[in-house]
Image (cartoon, rainbow, N blue to C red; front, side, top):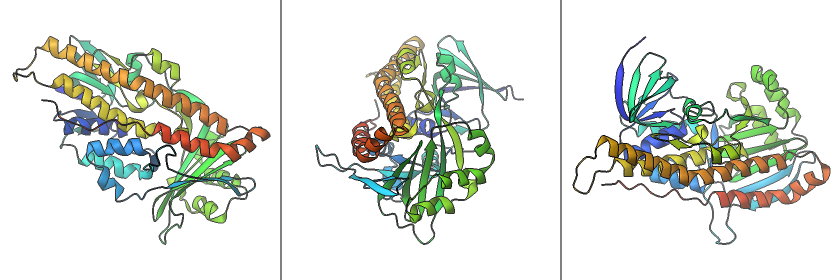
Length: 413
């Protein structure tokens, strides 16, 4: 056990997408941060995720958008099927009908994103094997006590430590709720090319929804979510049964779609129960207090029905960094402010961040929850309406949620 004591102006807990994006945004604005990661390496949960226009604006602000575009071709639209009958029910392009502008949608590999973000950070930014145990107040500072005995004194604490966030708990958030649905996610590789083109293939069945989306010419990401959590523990412990369970539900879908699931290696399967933050809790609980705040899943975990969880985490990082840059900016005379004044400026900057993100988070979490449960109905009439009419309206809604612009990063003076 170490009894080391350290100082850091800004500490970020968690080296996930939210934490790394925030650290890089701060770095772009000339601010150094320390990222604490409980694991001994850069962990990545899940294979890939859909990145919408709002996420690409954030990635461009971070200066890594173009390098990621090269490896991930554009997805142009969505094709929807009814699994039981195996018939196509809808096809929609990712184009805003009111403006004629095509949305930028790609399926981004999580590992590549995490590595790209971390590689852009100064050496030593991420401190691995650093689990936060407790938070103590010390005047205008916070003392962070780690599992290895280290104590870190910081001016700003940012919780990006996921759905089981210690920082969110300190702010008064309850544990993220468990949804009644579970999801299995996987990743299939085609050495000869998959042939799916540039479409997201979406399909519904009785009590489940699934989708297949190309990441590049040789790899496909897929998900399968269903409305009962009764078998989740059994499936988590047996990946082979997990795969058989999914294949048993695919009905009369085309063979090329079924083949995606067949060729997925059992080691590349992940099963988990979906979790979310009650929307009203985002309105009532402090996203920031004093010199502490939360972002990403620590703040607004949501069900995946809008595809905005990771996208909004990237937004968080850019917005939060811009607010903090104002707090740490020198005065027009170049003089440093007093400790008291700096503390008040930090409080104001985090309050500004919370105000900007609160309603955005509330909107995404609540909409995702409602849309998700509409899609999982077993009522025959509603299922017919869903298969026939919901897909186009869903795409329109997704595109509306993806119009948010976090803005570019400009260093304060």
